[in-house]
Image 1: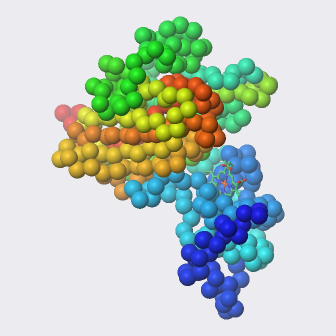
Image 2: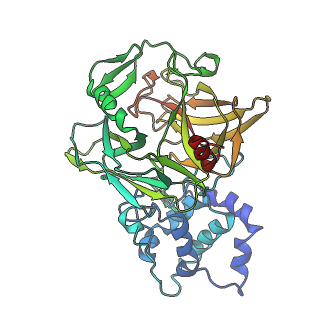
Image 3: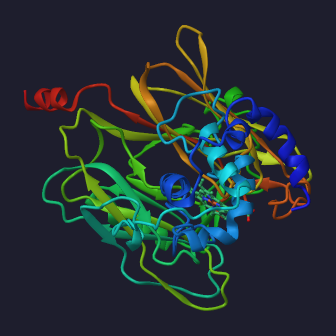
Length: 458
Ligand code: HEC
């Protein structure tokens, strides 16, 4: 708390000209109170995480809950640490931009400085769906069978297949993965799989503790790059863009939703939806990490919201990687690139940057067929604990032949306080203490769904 005066001066100098200080001196202005001014703001921007049994450490739903945190809350919003948001606003406009406006920050600032008044009695409006853990209102919920996460499972990947039993194609507007037990579910990716593929996948995952291919090995079900695999840091200078030699750096995946640290429900823009074909299975890839010294039972679910209005564009996702890098020990600024050339016209819908604890920053740009370049996403201070998906306010066309170039920097030094071990050289691997370098583009097919259906019938 002793830090306050120094933190405050630059902020207040910035704001005095605009709102707060003038407001404070004006007697005519109504007083800022919790119930009138602050509660609606916290409802809108904070309680999605700050409520019982959610990812934040404390609930901020009521006056009594907020009061003990008022000063630290003021500090974190003034410093823009909360709500979390990691995309540089200079590039792209995002519909789920969580940042508070200057006016909203000024309200919290003034409320705390003027004695945290309660105001008129609260009219409680707890959302019944929110209190059940969801941030969306699912039409259907699919849940994995109970899975025992043993106390020794510190970095375990499980692949669990759940039939949708859908008898017709379903269009998914929004989806959310809800961990059964947040203490052990580190992340979970849910992909759509054709029924015929399930047996093949099960067979592949049954192979444990043996060589996967010439570049990889497994410990249990967890995959790692071999230490002696060729090193390709500059994927853009390599024939495969950073992918495993002979494989493209980018591949298609149909992902209704994913649970990652700091990741919220995915809601696609109106008219855009993801298709789950009749009879499909959902593959839950769940990364369990149990550090509780006790066996824990998990039942993770996905909630799906069906599209209400006619769907115009079908959603897909390219996951683009460098899978061959090597980050030397103690290197505090190691550069890795990946490149992928779009094989068809797509409409850009959302972006996700994915690295592990050593990820420092990531920038992705589009290099158009005419040579023009545009930065799509820049995450200047990557933080493993906050892996948002950034949904574009305005979708736009990325023509076939556009090169997507991603440049990431990693900090494998001791100055990176999240670094599990600076003395280790690091390669690609599924555990969090190894690394990944991925940029995911959620896109839509420019061809209208109805047009495509008409063509298929001809
Ligand atoms: C996406 C989820 C999410 C949202 C939205 C969110 N928080 Fe948080 N908040 C967290 C989590 C998780 C933590 C604990 C981890 C951390 O401190 O990084 C946290 C920590 C905090 C802390 C403690 C910081 C500290 O240093 O101890 C404060 C205060 C806080 N949040 C206030 C807010 C306020 C005020 C808002 C809205 C304006 C907000 N948060 C929005 C998830 C969220």
